[in-house]
Image (cartoon, rainbow, N blue to C red):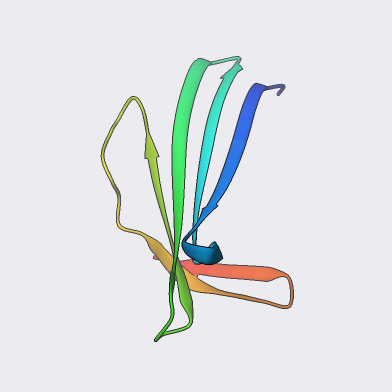
Amino acid sequence: MEISGTFTVRKVWGGRTQLEEIEADGPKGHWETLTLFLYNLPSHQWSQTFINSKMAVLNPPLVGAFKGGRGDLLN
């Protein structure tokens, strides 16, 4: 499957927050999505929340950590 579009990443709050925006066209049409990563300093964990332009509903975040170049985020 081939998808054509843009992927923009913006770091906020000294890198403790990251906002990713995807806008693309593929076999199923046009789609737009945002992913928000937030770092919780006391717990040393990241949360990851997704939202897309068609649903516009925030789902419960995935929570976990990145270690050794790998991220384990669970709901």
